[in-house]
Image 1 (cartoon, rainbow, N blue to C red):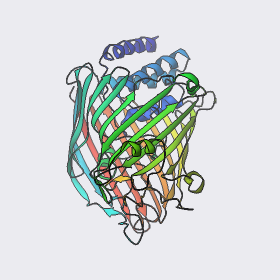
Image 2 (image 1 turned 90 degrees about the vertical axis):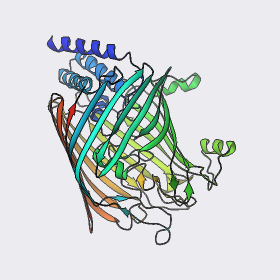
Image 3 (image 1 turned 180 degrees about the vertical axis):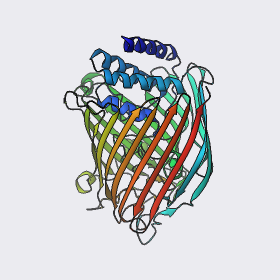
Image 4 (image 1 turned 60 degrees about the vertical axis):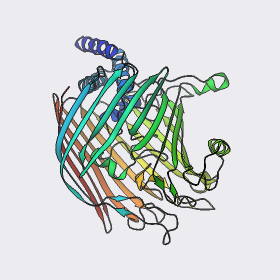
Length: 494
């Protein structure tokens, strides 16, 4: 009875603030990404609500937590109802989405890192390919400010920035727009398209990385984007695809290899053709055009149609599938992403995939989740190019070395296991352990060719509006190592 009364109060509050509809985006690495993923794995989220399917906003997270709490309560899954309610309370405490200044938080701490590198550029190893490009070590104080609000019902703003890893940076700054059934944005964000936690094939460098340092080695996308806010059904025979979502983003980067100012575009479409237990998605990305490489209507149409325009574009695509088997009280989900880089025939000759399994909540221990993931990028073969390199642009699948996609960096493989303990409002613990082997065509070769072992760890202690967050990452190779440590004390001001 007590839980039902609490749930009713939370739902009423969530409904009240939902009147402000312009989106406020939550970046990869925010705790809500993992929470939504876990509720989706448990079958408590709405169709097409997983981060593989949907842009993660404050409004989307609130809707998922509210729906999950109601479904769990109605089906007698009291432990998961408690967990969803706790996540909803935490979201409301830090992201009440009403008012010009809806929420603000400040933080101060210390960061240190060494052994970080950017991806190489060029194409031919031993000739024009640069290999891994080292970044300077950093060790010093850090400060961060995060705030968001609504200027009008249809216009929001969001900013995160400060002194991080020895730099004054603004990793995220967006204006959000509510345009009928669409949400749109303009500014700077990190994007992630895919089901893998460690990274994705087309776009996304993982949701468990050390967020304080992400701006140093992972791409921060600058541009505009639009997505359908709620799942919809296609007309005619495409209605068989079930509830679907579509998202597009386009921007420009300063340089890619030999090409100055090329365009960058990403898109995804996801659907649930066989009920809410199975999800299917298609992701595409392209670097195209630029100075002395004109964009014409014919070239654009050929690129959109999947035709390979030598010298005009560099494309990567992937197909993602998720399946949640009917295992009773065990909330388990299996996923697969497979893709190709640029050239027809690569799916057969140069297979690349990410496959994994997640247990969203252990039976009897709903606060704990576990998972296992394997990633493999094949070497070039049979006329197909090397992964994440382009022979015409002589650049990599990156923004001047900051990766668009999987941090493995192409050619090689990785095994990853992860575990998480969530007690919202009190404590969160997470740990990832991985083993990698980078091949000779990897974007970080030859300097980081071979085996490496590492871990990502995080702990957050929460008390009211105050939180102490500790994050770290280590990776050891045969003749090199990489370390990152961040300690941050934060306080919500509003």
